[in-house]
Image 1 (spheres, rainbow, N blue to C red):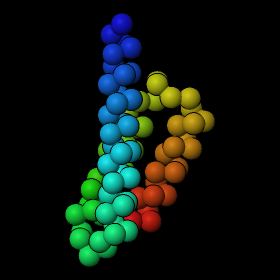
Image 2: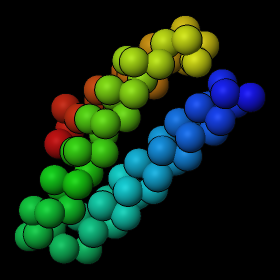
Image 3: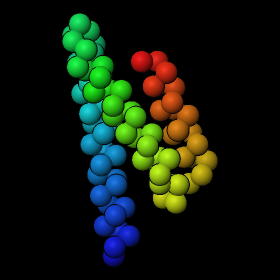
Length: 78
């Protein structure tokens, strides 16, 4: 039960971070002069990358490597 609730909370947190990325992306595209959107986008990506690094036990190793690679790519773009 304890693991289930931790997994649920982590899933919810990652979902919210992904949602933040989407809304920041929309803001960047609509108002590229506002640096807050880019900042929020980058912070959300960094937080997800930290979670992925810390949560090796909860992810399939090959999927985890791909997620890390994808988010590292997004971070480099910005």
